[in-house]
Image (cartoon, rainbow, N blue to C red; front, side):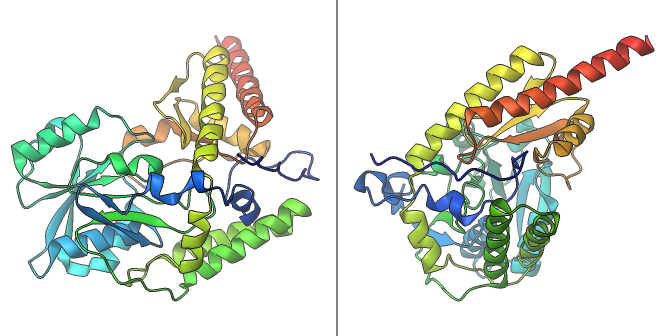
Length: 360
């Protein structure tokens, strides 16, 4: 396999960890090797369902629900209580009064679903093989339709056991492609959307920032990133643009997955050794998620050192979300970057320990 070139050295004393991908982050993992085929991870057909490619995960979900609902009355989509409300708002814009929403707080309640219900089953930061048994049980006991959400385990989508499945690759790398497995093949639309145009401008701004860091460029790419997300609130269901599909098909998913796995293992081991009181949640190659009562203090100190972890589902009403923090472990980062994250966390822990000791 050809060697993946290293990232260019940053001129900034503390390079950013986290944030939007730039094009260079993606392109250095592109390869012409026939061993890295897109179809190996995302086959054309899985369990008699056909692969369609969309711009975002919500486009993919809207297309599945549009197909499933047909001309009948509104359907009820059940989601976990920590699911992003903003995403559901965008879904509602696309489907209008054809959809209603319900929240399920625990797995026990899933067996209360009705045959006309649709469940969005989230694979929470990894694919757990045991989920197949749960999904099959729900289908057998209730007759409900199950759509599996692989956005946080995108490379495992071919393992789905439900009626439909979707993922998104835009948080895996700089590529606006989401995969959906559904009954019919849809005719793609390839007109650029405002979202795609703004996101590409944000990528350019970040690439410029990495070459010549400045507060002005940093604020520009963050602003464009926000505007691109806001541009997703439209009625149209957008297919993936042909240029994005080409970039996805040239991507070396296998090498990237291994880099992510290595970073996850290193960061998890070092955090467990240095901050044993912090709970490390299950994961594999998307994010390393932790739970801590001091979440906001750790986050503030990380931000001050230009490490930008994510708060997933920040707009949900789930209390559990208030303790969660998600670290980027992706292919942009090296073992040195993982050690830098640990060092900041350990310093904050030391300061907190001194504060609590003094107050006692």
